[in-house]
Amino acid sequence: MATLEIALSIGFAVLVGKAPQAGFTPAHFALARSQKKDNWLACGLIWCVVLAQDSAVRQVLWIGGGLVLGWLIQRTLHRMRTLQRRA
Image 1 (tube, rainbow, N blue to C red):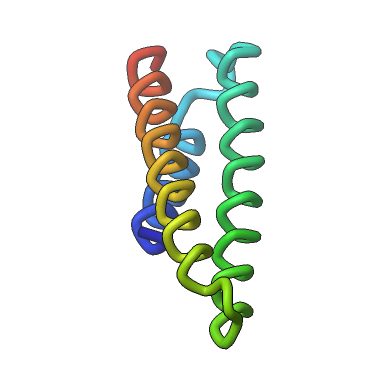
Image 2 (cartoon, helix red, strand yellow):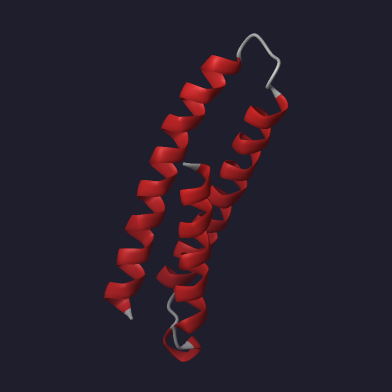
């Protein structure tokens, strides 16, 4: 799931890069800003899971992390669809 989130984030960045800069609206900037925040959240979550490999709460982190990454994937897909609609 982490790999999928990273791939989708890169895809979103490519879509933003291909969009004409003259047509950028405040909504486009809001999409990019919120994606950046989600990327940091995903990064922190992935590192928490990696660093807690020998911890007693490892299973909880795996399950919780998977749920959060699934939610972040949905949000990224929604942003990509929104960006493509507005382009």
